[in-house]
Length: 108
Image (cartoon, rainbow, N blue to C red):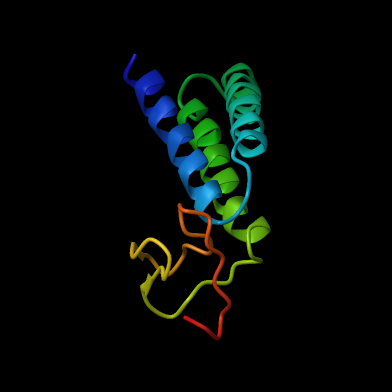
């Protein structure tokens, strides 16, 4: 049961991170969920119950890192930045403000 709760929290983090990187979250959530089930079941059938955890959660970790690769090709700002439209402070890895503002690398 606790694994299911962590999975839901992880997938919601996928959605939020993808949105802040200027991407849609549902493709990453779909790939993460399918891979979680496939690699987890494959590891359980081949190796037993022990490595199930590492294969399934490892896949989620790799899928989460792919958000940064596909969203902005891994780029980020040097420091936190303030959105001129909504005045929200954003972290350096945020490329698109939640209000929809897309800053240039030189203007922030």
